[in-house]
Image (cartoon, rainbow, N blue to C red):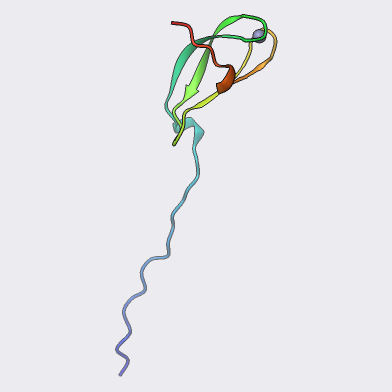
Length: 72
Ligand SMILES: [Zn+2]
């Protein structure tokens, strides 16, 4: 009688929660553009672009990608 009694597919449970503790990173050595302090900072390997954000341990300056000065 009823031809459309197929079981319903499971409800979509696409959980898109960014878990920052799961993001791989690399440690880089940079120079603070403000005070010149050499320090290590993390580059997060986020998608689609890596995240460059570090606060200077000395003067508190927020170093972003534009100010990022890697040391070889
Ligand atoms: Zn600084």
